[in-house]
Length: 183
Image 1 (cartoon, rainbow, N blue to C red):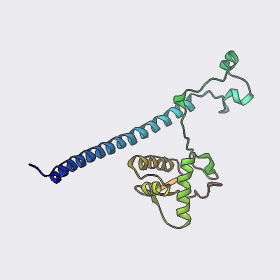
Image 2: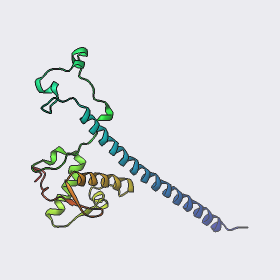
Image 3: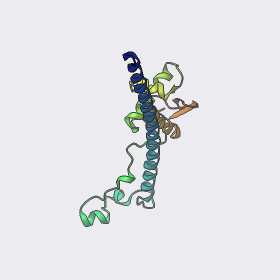
Image 4: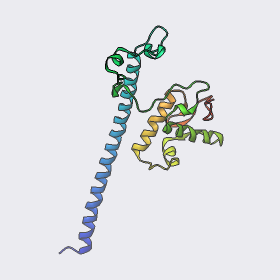
C-alpha cells in the first residue's frame, strides 16, 4: 500500500507539470498577441496613410471644403458631414519629430516614455530597456506589456523622437529635449 506522503508527492508533481504546461501556453499566447498587435498597428498606419492619400485636395494642397468654408456635395445633399471610415482612422498618431515640435502632439503613452527617458538623460543615467521602462511605470513586467512598450519605442525611433544606440536600449534622439518645445 502506497504511503500518504507518496500519494501527495505524486499529486504535487502532476500539479507542477500542469502549471508549467499552462505557463508555457500562456507565454506562447502572449507572444502571438504581441505579434498580432504589432501587425494590427502596421495595418492601422497603412489605413491612415491611404486615408490621407485619398482625401480630396485642391492645387494648394488643402481640402477644398475646408479652404473656403464650402460644404462638399455629400454634406449639401444629406445635411451631414461625411463619415471617415473607421479603418482609415488610427487610435494614436505619432508625427515625425522636427525642431520646435512640442511633446503635447503625442499620445499620453508616448509622452510617458519620452518623460522617463528625459529624466534619465537629465540625471546622466543612460539608455533604458523596455523591461526597465515597464518596471519604472509600475507595470507588471510581462512579455506582452514589454512588447507593447517596445513597439511604441520602436515607433518613436522610426519617427525621430528616440534613438536606439544599442539593440533594445532607448534614449532621446539628438535635439529632442523637454516637453515644452521638443528641442
